[in-house]
Image 1 (cartoon, helix red, strand yellow):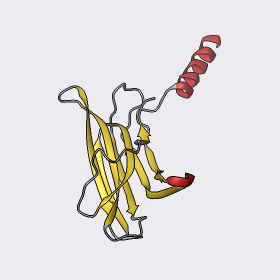
Image 2 (spheres, helix red, strand yellow):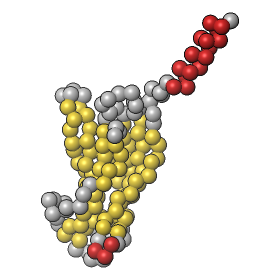
Image 3 (cartoon, helix red, strand yellow):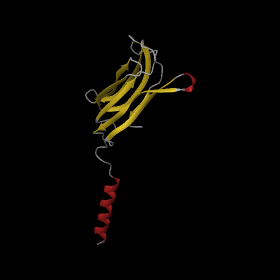
Image 4 (cartoon, helix red, strand yellow):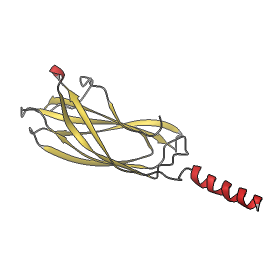
Length: 155
């Protein structure tokens, strides 16, 4: 009787402390702000992301990141654009090394919303920043605002 009770208690404790095989994140909201002079802030980039197949027991990231969002041109001139620039850090299992890539989306009509979506595999960190450029330019080193972390797999 005592061994049976101990065995049942141990089994119950194991069930309570076991981590799930996969921990999905669904529709987690994100927003990226743009500080300006006078302590004001614009919030031109926004959206939500989901992760499927994330394994919390692995050291390296697994799973698929799906992001949807929008960018609003917060300027008041037709000759400038508001960009959201993403930096994606992921793990390349074929080459066994972490890598970075990026994505950019823009809106060039004042107060116009542009929607976007993308997916990426094995993401360990997703960062974004907002930049302003002339109409025919793309964000470069002059966009000095720091990246803001949207998602990070492991601390």
